[in-house]
Length: 138
Image 1: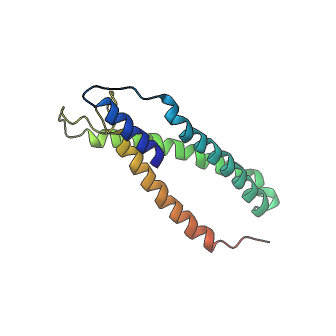
Image 2: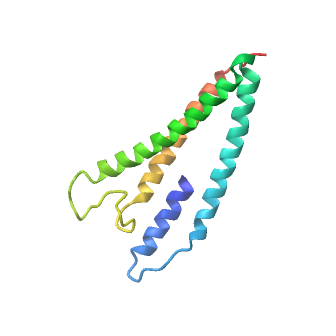
Image 3: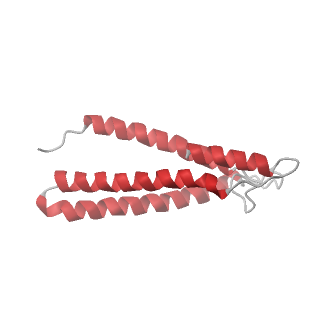
């Protein structure tokens, strides 16, 4: 998210310059590569945890609940995107279109990415706290 925020900040600066210039879409490739790798490694770790730590009769249920949690997270992200878009445009001032308007050159999508990076950092700290305290079954 930090990389996405930096790329979006650069794109906005180029779009809002006196003589607007274009930015290559290839700048997004590293973010998608990292996201894809993170999802692969997370899925492997999640499978290993549920198969290793779940009782025999609950291994499939544990994995189903993990997949449900991923789906719920995607829905939560969509709801958060809609809430941020609505909250940042609630003023009704046409000169300030909010963070996520229809024309992204007029908004500040980078602010949303920074907010998501902060939430991700907070989640990481919470995960570290719980993982240090976790004592698995042997």
